[in-house]
Length: 112
Image 1: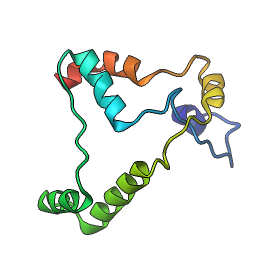
Image 2: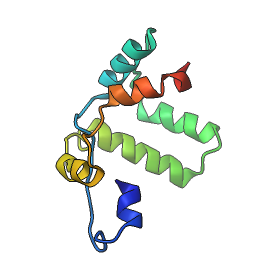
Image 3: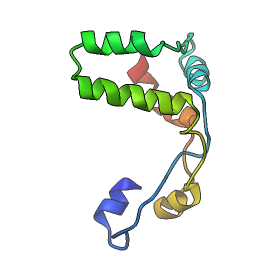
């Protein structure tokens, strides 16, 4: 949908909030990956300070560390939950929106 919005006329000045057809938790993503890959994938909720230390040690710039932690806090507070704009996206794409499981099945080799 982003490619269409950026390359085809009729989207000037418009803003789209688009999601997939389902709202999943991190644990649900891990469960789907476990099923698709046939091996356990576990979600680990890393405390913010441990995440900060790890990101800093990896050499990530401090501004990026702050941005990542802000995003994780936003997601942990369930502020990213919801399904939005699916009908708009499906109309624009001319097909049904895909699920995370369908995406994971198509890209399973990348996780092996």
